Length: 136
Image 1: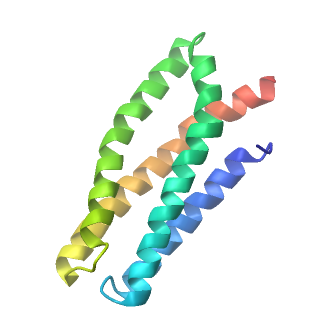
Image 2 (image 1 turned 30 degrees about the horizontal axis):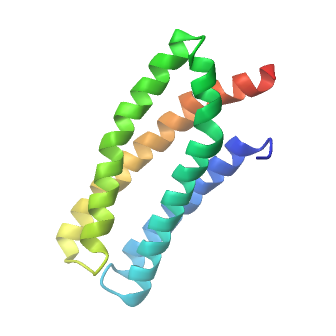
């Protein structure tokens, strides 16, 4: 993986958020909205896979020797359980369309938890990775 992992992950965050917003603009019940929703789901899954493949192994290695990194990783792992459930439930519920107000409420919840996670990753987790990467 290139030395620009964190930049790549941040760019993916932007693309995922943009695509989810496009779902709202197009409407969840439209064909285009459905396609965007599945696109957002696929982008999110690819993003998580990239983190699991390239980001977390290095952090896990460092956590063996640094209790602060261990606590950070444990906190992020616990947090991710709830986010994964919310995302999977949302994508499952709306893969065939949905109702206006209910969709907007559910979308708002998903977008909120994803936004908070992204902010936490970018301000905490990615900084830890960058510090470790500088030490190599």
